[in-house]
Image (tube, rainbow, N blue to C red):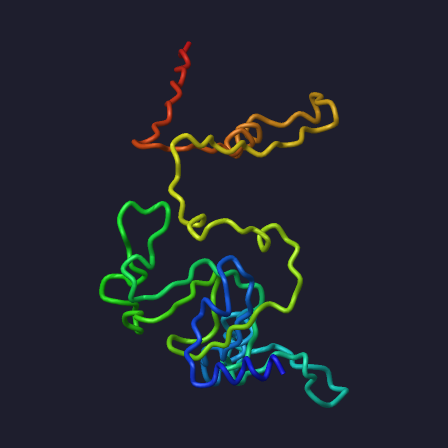
Length: 236
């Protein structure tokens, strides 16, 4: 009875996004992907091209099966319809929610001035957002202006990323000059003792020395590397 009464009270009433979803929540997106029509094997399945002098085309499958069984198996890549499929993508995190008519809809804690979610001139191939919007992490299937169904996640999330309830501006924080540079990854040394036979030559030593990761934090200005002076060999 309570559910029926709730639904009847919602008849012909506008429902805002804030009443259904919330920030830092994991949701799923259901949509029809972007259609590409009838495509070949190389574009549809990502197979490699055949050699240049292949007879009757090279963007094909070299062998589509054995003599028997005398049919093409369903595992063999073939040309056909690409895109325009019904797909469900799970585990999309909500980063920001608001109304496009609000001049401060895109402002975060890191911004000095007020910003709107709309860029100058509006979004490409869409226009200006003037109603409720929801910002989701990751890509969403389908072209611009295609209807997308959003639903709450059906899974119980236990990862640290999904359970993080930080503010919506955490993804757009400015880099602080006081943050320390990340440490270089440690390399495990060899367990065997170096001898004359097993010692690395000078060329390999130079390569390993140059490939060690170095992390720098530039707070302004260019980082200049010190040039090593080459010692000139005296000719006898």
